[in-house]
Amino acid sequence: MAQIAPAVAQKSGESLLFLTDEQLRKGIEAMFFAYRGFTADPDRILEEKGYGRAHHRAIHFIHRAPGTTVNNLLSILGVTKQSLNRVLRSLIEDGLVESRVGHRDKRERHLYLTEAGLELEHQLSDAQRARMRDAYRAAGPAAVAGFRQVLEAMMDPEMRRHFHRITERGA
Amino acid sequence: MAQIAPAVAQKSGESLLFLTDEQLRKGIEAMFFAYRGFTADPDRILEEKGYGRAHHRAIHFIHRAPGTTVNNLLSILGVTKQSLNRVLRSLIEDGLVESRVGHRDKRERHLYLTEAGLELEHQLSDAQRARMRDAYRAAGPAAVAGFRQVLEAMMDPEMRRHFHRITERGA
DNA sequence: CTTGGAAAGTCAACAAGGCTGACATAAGAT
DNA sequence: ATCTTATGTCAGCCTTGTTGACTTTCCAAG
Image (cartoon, rainbow over all chains, first blue to last red):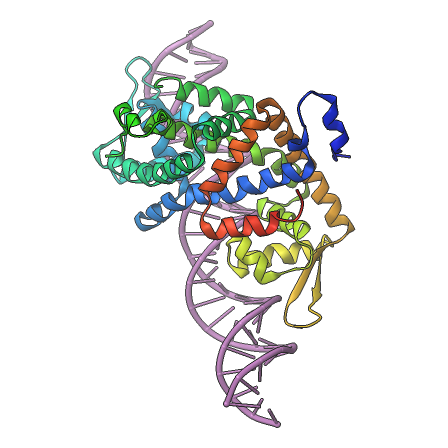
């Protein structure tokens, strides 16, 4: 059902060989193995500190959008408030995150990294960016552009909105 | 520490603007959001059947390398045998996977998908490939080549070996 | 032939991090 | 005054990862 015969490639002007099931499977496996590498370095650092990936995600997005509300973080991370709350509570207790009551709407809590939080964020980010930088450098700018295009096309629309919102400040 | 100033770009002949921290952060976030999309469709199917991602991974790689041993699967998946065993046991009990005692070495178990297993594999794979295909088509062949280059550069060396071994038959 | 060690399986216990459901509180909105 | 929203919290459940200990099977080296 899903086999795209090479003959189909004639349909368009360009070769559609990159859409064969075999190519798609390779892409799927590449995503799987690459994601392991992507998380490996932060995971090691987090383990030492007794944290997990969930903490990393919270720290990352709070750093990226300081003052974000719990609800906003919830929709970015796509988890339940109970799940996020467990993580946030430990980060707040450990003094990595500060929760400030909203100025206009006092129901909201605005989240900020403390000095210690920023320090851990840097440590995690440095490790992850180092791997990313090596991969980017090895592949070159054209490949990086393609990489980003495919990733973006792979996102759910709602996630793509988050991605653009978070990303749109800065180059 | 990790900031690469635009001035550094002059060092090489080509622009190194794609290696700024901001660009790297975007790449990191793109990976995060894209991976969610990548797993979303299979996750929905698996949930209906009472399985999880761990089952999907086992099914995928057994399909990809029929007759693989437990130990081989273990090193591909990077989990403990206890963890994999729990998943395999349920798949065997449910008749999706068959475990055959080794011909030469009778300690080894060779794993195969049954008819039912193949059927589920197809269902999961179709969903995941559909998203992949849409993303590939939207981005175009050049972008796909870059995508694959960056992903491969991002893998740990051992995972890259697995990737090549699994992938090297076929185009 | 015996024994060492590898491959596999199993049991128990635990932790992280998802989930649901129920409920409490504060405060904006109507 | 009441409805709704934002947040927090308690309890309980599931999946999927972990370690450690132990058994069975069986190849291979002595």
